[in-house]
Image (cartoon, helix red, strand yellow):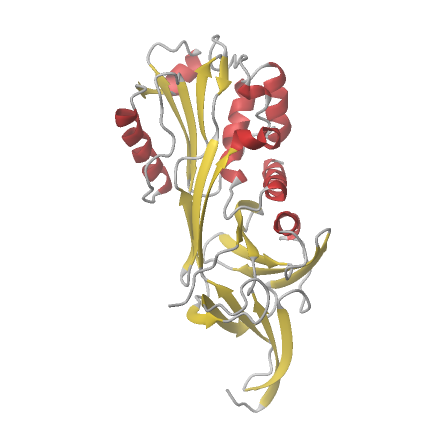
Length: 356
């Protein structure tokens, strides 16, 4: 139930913002927590988006900090770290250290400055990594057409047997090619392309909805096939994809209706937290991801989201089928937890790395 809801939130968010990187999985647990302690319309909206808790299958955490003297319920008083001061010089290193400890990765400075108006800060952190079961080698990709035509892109190439990881889906955005790059653990990365025939948000949303259900296929955007001389007659899959590093910062209140935060941003009650009227004064998430030869690595640039609560206001002897899939124009990607199908991160690549 919660995995389906979280993936629905990812698809909805992607359909309105095909950003370089986004992660509904990082946000969902915090929205579910807020919904469980909200009252009135804020509770209704939050629980419509995140009605049940989500146990993250990767490294992640929720943090809670409070100012001294804030009247919290007994439950939240026991859970909150009371060291919040309102002084950025003191609070920012505290939050930086928490983010690094929870993700296991170094992170740039915390992007939100706590002020003396903030009574409470909630934060979520998430780290996603995948080491490829079959690593890539470095190469150069020279697109002949499309937005990247004439550029020399730093790319990753791989050749191997079997076509089962190549899928083609018929979607509302048109035909979409999906390639699963398998990790050695429980996380895979799915690359997706529609060959430039549909808007990025529609393609990314369609990929989220079909990434685990699309049939194996040999025909789709970015795919070519040919019979070649080979020592082994088994079909062979060749993958060519640009290296990329992506980062993005999102203001969640800018699309408050997507995340169920519209009523929560107005002064109201969160009776599970405090008898004092509170509101969500800001909600943001900053994320970074990198697709490299050895694997995929992603972690919040800042803990995400941050929700301050303020008082209101070669030649061979056989012939073999060689299928080549090229991601040589803007494409999308998903980091997927294989056992559950939870989409941990998603994004759209417009600016691949140039070859030097």
